Image (cartoon, rainbow, N blue to C red; front, side, top):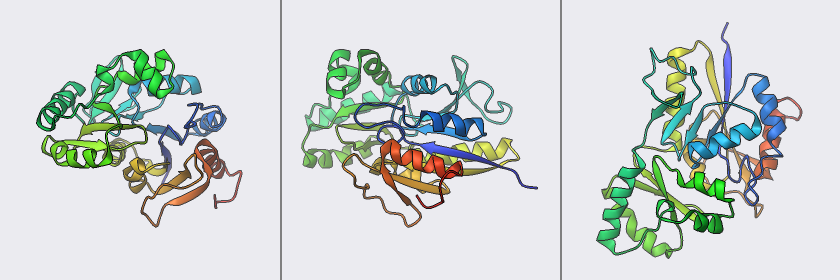
Length: 277
């Protein structure tokens, strides 16, 4: 008889945690209950491992996570069978890396700057106090946001036509620039959230007899690849009450902003509400 394992791949800012105050309080009890019932809750976000690990600790969980927009899958000790899955061990955690080191990303960005004469100010070159000021994070959280291992976060202050003119230069350097509201994230072109989810599923299939069934939750255009690569994609509302303009007939549009929408899906999985959310 076939047995199944359900994995919930979830974005963080504006999805599981509140867009404005970064709170996870609303979703916390549901995350914990899902994990108690055997679900995998896998963060899949632009956030660094240090940021995601702090959030896991706040929620009282220890789970695999997909960091920096799909640049790496990082799992607790022993999650992957190392006789099957090649991993790099850092502080006991298992890393499957899809992207390139941040130092290499920054070198390529410097070449783009030199060619176009535009200053692309990244978090790595900013004072921690300045990062805290523009993000609304406390100093500790801002410092963790700067600890990027596979990407660089840029201020989005340049005009849109300038960003568009930079696209070809990013592509030439093997980079992707992922637009956000206040910030853009630059990663290696080989990495994205969808590629990381596909890799996770591939590794799971190689070592487990359980069939992986995947749910996905996101709130923005940056979650398109996430939602395209899960069995059951869900799009929650943005703070203004609208849904992001993501294509996809299979996507379930949840009538709830951010974590309120997340909780609606969790209640559905827990059997507390009907399937339609």
